[in-house]
Length: 215
Ligand code: CO
Image (cartoon, rainbow, N blue to C red; front, side, top):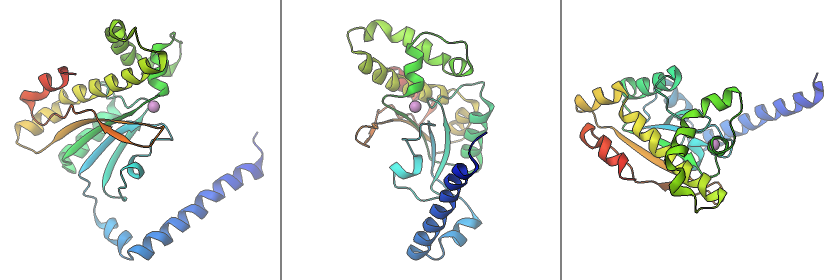
């Protein structure tokens, strides 16, 4: 059992923070929440890692309503994951986002775990695709330090997810129908807060394969 008072304090703080946040926004724009309540028209779908140090909206200075967000461990887009597929379908077909951004981050624990020895747990099962990327890239990474290997694999992982998104039927259909939609791969550096473009953007079906296989 946890100490009752301890958790009450932790939770109370969230509501104090929330009230302050509402006040700050209302001071800036008193119609902000009433305008936002009528609709959402985000132009971006963000697919990022669940890591607490990589807050989606915050690091690109985007207000509520501007980014549709999906996060999971190691920012993976697996073709069997109903959750991410539903998010992508909703974002593309209903919200009609213009950009899907896969954002990885250096030093990702999920990616790091994929380099280490396998464990018989659920997380290990989740990151299995990254083990496959590592096996494929391993010989090219052998002269790098362990940290550098992890960081390079973090980049490779993002590029692989951009590729995976290109193969999703909803995306292919959007391109076939002439919808403006670009898929991007970014990487975030936790050490200095900077976001970097991996320059693997794909915005049509013809370029999908060659664009992502260049890197
Ligand atoms: Co991570």
